[in-house]
Image (cartoon, rainbow, N blue to C red; front, side, top):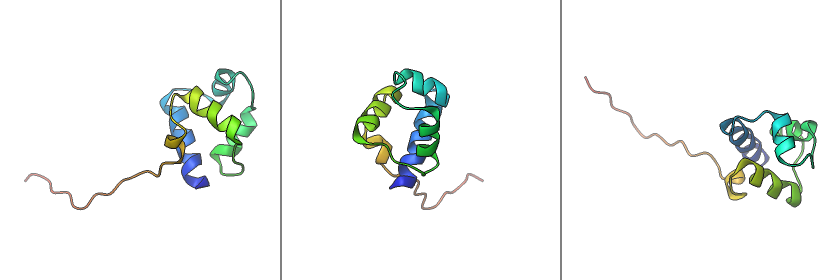
Length: 80
């Protein structure tokens, strides 16, 4: 679960075009850049308050941050 969370968090941050510092500012500095780095490298998990603040700052649902990536390609055929 931590792996999915860390990848989703980084993905959401990059999609918003935010640096770790900018994300901290958007969250009213309730956490540090180092905390975000630890979340993205699977060294730490946020508590529920921070989790909700992260989701709000990134404009995603909390569910999004824990939903596994789905890439299931059965067979791909190319035109000749």
